[in-house]
Image (tube, rainbow, N blue to C red; front, side, top):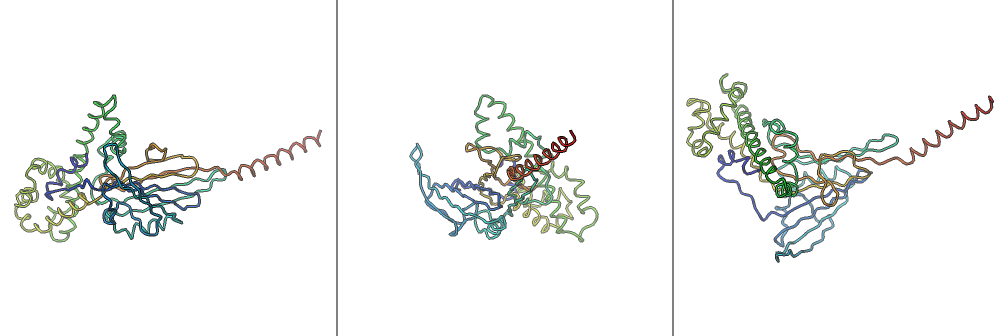
Length: 350
């Protein structure tokens, strides 16, 4: 779905390479009531090599690291590296993200923890959030329904099971509909981002016909022009033909450098060299709210893909509750004390 959604942008930068040798990585956060977090990172690779430049989530020699291997039924060998570390608080996790020199160092990630006392219960909230990469793109919920959004963000295992199940035709059609809508979302966001970046680069240089307001008014027109020339977009842009159609011949010649720079910025944001991974969260106490999915081990699971945080931040969150036993006991004792006092008064009056 991702490759189809970005086909317009791919034409601008010639190629988009996805390595099939990327390790499969799952990071699990075991959240403790005091705000500390035990993180376990499990990396599975086809090669007996775990280079820092290939790691989706950072860890180093301060972690407890163990290596193992497994042989699949077809005879293929997988190498597995597990890294575990107790973080005293989320600040330590966020610092590790800031110092990250791995595969996903270009994205901004942070964790958050909240503890709220409510007398009878204490509530906890833990989240991981990735900042958006685009500044002018449209929220994807403007294009997809709630059910479509859930399906889009579902782990691959859930999507595959539905597409291979008894309702396979239904979910195949559902997936195709989502793909068409995400194509539209991507196209409009790409045009909007280019307009925003071009307007910044030409601020104070152009007249009213090229300010951001006038360009935004022509956004749909730009989108149709790009869609019409989809198959030869790259050559038309390089030759300046497409730019002349968008902003006129005189302006295309005058602001070609700014237009190319804006297109390059848009491409770098949308086609960020990002390696996918998964996040799991295990909360203390009873779960009371989340936007995640339950995996086979009954933990919460989120896939992390670049299209999730293109135009808006991607937050993975969970909330839980632990009863305050002492509060119940104190309240019970106090209630007994009050009732005893009332009963004694009644007896004395009688």
